Image (tube, rainbow, N blue to C red):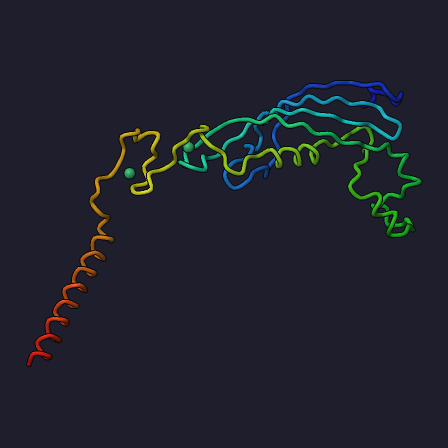
Length: 200
Ligand SMILES: [Zn+2]
Ligand SMILES: [Zn+2]
C-alpha cells in the first residue's frame, strides 16, 4: 500500500497467485482449499481510503448434479471493496474500541465497512462473498448431461442413447400385479358364489 501513496486518484494494479481459503463450498461444488487462485486487483486511492477492485480466477471441484460424476471447472469473479484509512475512524468511532463512548446509531453506520489495518488490506471477505455468489447450485459435468437412468442408475452418458430396459416390469411391481390379479379372481369367485346362492 505504501507504493500507492495517498494522493487521490493514484492507482496501482497487482497480480498474484494466492492459495484459496478454506470452507468455500456449497453442497455439490466448491473451491479446493489451497488451490491456486489468480488475483488481479486494482487499488485506487480515494479521499477516504483505498478502493480495491479485483478479478479472481477460481478453480472449482465438485460433482455433477445430474450424474454425480466428479467435475472440475473454474469461475471468474469480480469484487470491489472500499477500505477506509485508519484516521477516518476518529470521527466515525471505532466499534472495536471498547472505551469509546458512542451511541448505537453511529456504531451501525460503521457496520459493514472495512478498515485498512496499517498497510495491510484484507481482501478475503470481499473475495469470499463474490465466490459464494458465483458457485453454481446445480453444477453439471456438461451442459447436456443426460443424468442417470431412472431404472438402473447407470450414467446415461456412458450407457449410450440405446440404453433402455425391456417392458419387463420391475419385480416389485410384478408382485403387486400378481396380487391385484388374484384380487380379481377372488371377486369373480365371490360373484359366482353369490349367483349360486340366488339360484339356490
Ligand atoms: Zn453429469
Ligand atoms: Zn438403465
